Length: 174
Image 1 (cartoon, rainbow, N blue to C red):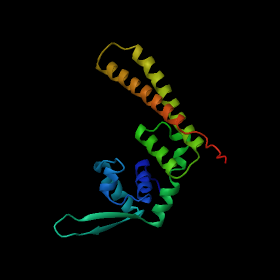
Image 2 (image 1 turned 135 degrees about the vertical axis):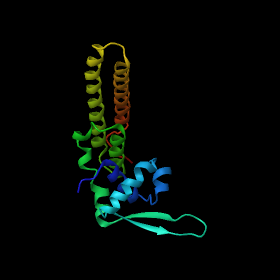
Image 3 (image 1 turned 90 degrees about the vertical axis):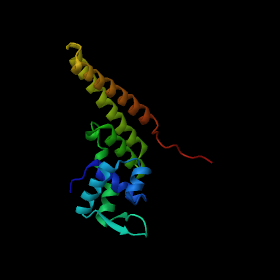
Image 4 (image 1 turned 30 degrees about the horizontal axis):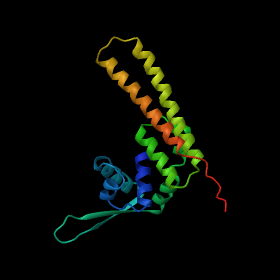
């Protein structure tokens, strides 16, 4: 059963107590535009169930709960995503994968490696774009390509800095 990073991320958030689209929007920073279709997909795949509650004078409230299959995917579906092969995903996906790994107590060194690889991938892409930009006239396409190169460099720096925050756990001494 193939699921997107967003789908697994939403399952992970539901597993951590976010129950409604409001929770996913306000507390987890997800847009309704991407969340609602994802919830429908997850419900169709029978990974979640929806409970509609009614209160007088207000709109129905939908709460979502994980099925057994949804819980299993929420707790384990992120593991293959942490492989370095996914480090070229868009920045949102990289951050979601790192967050799921953190929330599920992945070893900090694994998360650091993943983020460092994502940074390296972006730096390589920025170098390729720099070579292409150097050979073009100053037109819209060139300026847009320069922006893309600068964005990749900024993302790489951010991911490197974030990776540095994941250190090998230190042993506590008494």
